Picture (tube, rainbow, N blue to C red):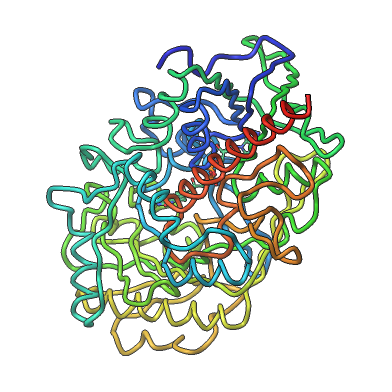
Length: 505
Ligand SMILES: Cc1cc2nc3c(=O)[nH]c(=O)nc-3n(C[C@H](O)[C@H](O)[C@H](O)COP(=O)(O)OP(=O)(O)OC[C@H]3O[C@@H](n4cnc5c(N)ncnc54)[C@H](O)[C@@H]3O)c2cc1C
């Protein structure tokens, strides 16, 4: 990659456009803008972790590529652990690259509810196609391994729809290290696909550069204020001027940055996630999930409201998951070769919020589950349990601290249509969205139908914040599709602006 990821030595920079964040959204914007010949500066808080230096050890990968080393949680009862990437390529460097489109009925519902212009499934199809082509969304060839077979077997035995999942991959070798930056460059993350192309077209990408604030004057974003470090660790302050400013810092940091920049209306008030509950299933035969790809099927029978899938499994990650109830579960570590890790996730009705905190990098994140979310979690957990026993599990342990686990399928109905215990249920999510919903419904939307922040002519949001509500599917394809759409609309808007000002002159 030519001239990429150089450190900053200048204090004042100028470009046609500046993009804040290099993840799924930011990288997609860079593709559109650089292809149109704009000069672009991209500012990314995290460092660059190329495949050649992908960490071998989970703890090093967490430190290098995950935000706060993977230790982030939304406050609530219970707190919900969430994960984000913080590196060049953002979440796409640590995700499983499963590629799915949002359900057409949901897209239609959002279009009507939020009054989003030109947002029909047909209109979005070409953006989805572009996203899928960019990452080579495809089925993974070769034997997928026992963790996949378990889910397929269990789901099918119950008569449920089970689907094989496409992923953004090219020649996946099954290293089982998707979450730690793919060492083979086979995962088609942003740092492997779009970003090198944009850098080749002249984009200047500044890694380890955090944006503090966007200055707004007379309805325009004028300067982006950031800080970085020089090679000897001295702070470097940067001021970037650009005609177009794109905020693509993810569903948590985009609203935090906008609010730090005194933009608050409807921003950060409507966080949505996919609350997820895990189970550990113990089998009589070795699963050897650590030598396999993560499960590449999902039970899609109950989508988009509920989905059942399988998680990345390495001894270290398994140990971490047991650590939430080590007293009761620690002994499972000795049987780790016989265990698999599966989950159920829901599309919640609850909402959260994001607020920046003065002097602290990480914003306050809160999420409150609605009563019906507790019922849905109980249902999906029961369904995961049923699927595991249908695949001949010997024991199934839900992620509820102090729970002894189920040893027969008769026991799994314990939480059917009953809320899970609030004090001891451990929930997590890796999907965050909706903190800046788009549309013309001014009481509900932070940005217009094309991602433009209301009242600021040249400031756009293009990342997970834009998905109006939880989609019930993996979100990367939708984020990329929406980001392509925002970037195209911004280009045509700025061309019109230029024509108008030329006419005035
Ligand atoms: C473990 C894991 C597995 C996942 N698996 C899948 C999957 O299989 N399929 C799927 O579709 N999705 C998956 N996801 C979710 C998907 O990766 C994210 O939804 C997606 O990457 C979000 O894109 P984004 O552009 O909104 O934000 P991000 O990709 O998070 O990018 C935001 C970037 O902005 C940077 N940033 C933040 N604040 C600032 C600032 N102030 N200044 C400069 N830079 C800043 C961040 O460091 C980050 O790099 C997974 C996520 C995780 C964590």
